[in-house]
Image (cartoon, rainbow, N blue to C red; front, side, top):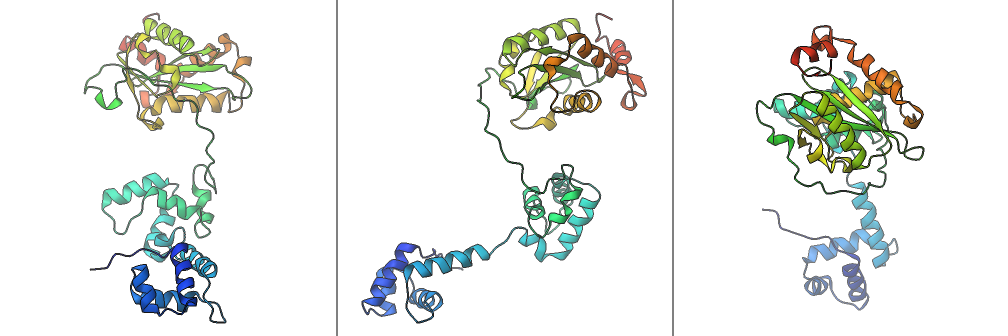
Length: 317
């Protein structure tokens, strides 16, 4: 069984230097420090200066350099060529790091690595050439902005508590103007069964504005439960006129349809950086209706409006 140990710190090295200069033997120094005599012997032999003098500051520097060079990013992947070859092959098929790691775990592959380990390898000098196969093409970790103020939402029900047959499910979200340009935003709701898209522009993300739009949408159209994220704009969710369930923190994948709809609106008409305050409500609703009248393969090449009428969602149409 391997004995437990701790690394010598600068205080211990400073004591070794003082005791060594005072003429104490290595065994005596080891007893005073409470370590094995070979620890003191190796420390003095490996860390002393070329002239034979032992200095605590020099020894601390040498130890820090050795420790920093003992490991490197992606070391496990670089040491196992079969694992490395598998990762490169999957990346060239444009698989994400999360999916590669999940697939390896599902198949019980040994050895395997986590998605974080894959990203660390990709951002190192060894794997950076394969970053071009990532969706973001990002060679460095995205810097974190200052986190917005967190708001406590009362009486939240988790998405995991939705019953097996909940009825008509909707997903709600917002998309924004650049923060430095405008506070105008858009509130969107998407029906899972029919891909129907509804929404409106709001002056800001104040819960008052969000509540007004949500109440109007769910008064005019049939829905049984809506999935939301934990943004402060949803603090008045109990007034939305529909049952609500909240995603886990930082989990947009739990409401993929509304995220995809926002992406389509940005690709077709309002790319990132668009100031939504310059868009009229009439133009916004016109583009929403264009989306609802597009044929979709997932709906057997029918439009969201057609399928929604069949489900009795559109009460006004």
